[in-house]
Amino acid sequence: MGKRIILVGDIHGCWSEFEELLIKLAYQEKRDRLISLGDLIHKGPESSRVLRYFIENNLEVLRGNHEDCLLKALLGERAMYPEATEILEHCGLSKKKLIAWLQAMPLYLKEKEFLAVHAGFSPWCKLSENIEQDYFTVRTADSEQEELSSKASGKGL
Image (cartoon, one colour):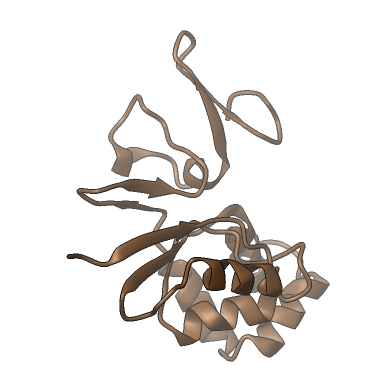
């Protein structure tokens, strides 16, 4: 029998709730394959702790919009913000290694048993041909207009 696959999204720095979930699932590292669908960080009080857990245990993480935001801040493509500074100081990796870890995150996982993304993708092209941002912002696809929408705008991307 193969490993049980556990997909978890949008932990958002909520360590105690995440830990409670793992207990309820009777998660066992050797028996289970734990995959984050992104948004490990932001909003909750313990982003660094959640991030460290996934880094230290070498767990799979898809890039969500919040990881993308952190990556852009670390690369200087947007302003650093207090939580990004706190994460950098407490995640256990140097800035260079944290950037490399974030950049190495896949945008999707396609396997025989499942297809996983953080948000969505365009059904009108090959999965690998989607625009990077679509994987962590798409919320709906209008088949009549062949238009993608994000939660934020409600309009085409």
